[in-house]
Image (cartoon, rainbow, N blue to C red):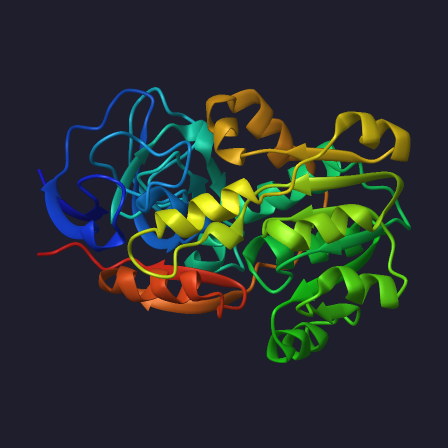
Length: 342
């Protein structure tokens, strides 16, 4: 029985508890595929889970990570969809920070021949999130004006590409001129650097939107809702304003922000004919049929491979998470999984 390496925290609450371990691989379970992981995609959900600010965080010890890419190295007799040597990308409800992962075949997707493993690890969670937000909740139509916050990040960048592919008009927002310039180089010309008074910025520019994707929260979210056209939708899938600046949350600051969070009056929403929708894609993990349907839909959309902005060695997970937490990353942050120990 061979060994594998994995990052695990004893319990949520402090990112410093995340520790690299070596363990023995168990016998492969029925209807499972064993993948030698080559790359792991990082998400803000990992930070929120490790700090205990995520409602879906497991109790006790757990391995973070929601997406990965690698090579099939063993297949149980019941798992007929894949063969040894296949290149795949996949999703998991935690457990992704590992050099080997056992997965049911329903959570695996063939990796396109011209993509590398890092691009594969950057695709599943962020693309499914953007697609579900834009189409299933946002009901995006051609020519509609869409506001996408954190447009240089993993989900934001995929959302910008999807809006273009679906015939919409995307306006991205970012926190710095450097990110705005970079997005312009990627072909996205309508990008706003968020001003301290974002509401006033939108009003002065006379900006109105049919759909907003927001994972920031706070005053940015309130201003975005106020800028919706009648029949407009605000789709919320995160709250980056609660991201801890250190390994442990500042609970007083988090509580203050929670008390001052945006609140919506449904009667006022009826009068203005605007909607708020919110979701957490991790619950889709339990609905295999729905996930497969979403993946089939995405196959019809011609998208380039996702942009991997930052690659770190598997052993350097803490540095990678610190960069993601800082808000300075562009595109996806990925761990290149280290080879198994001899």
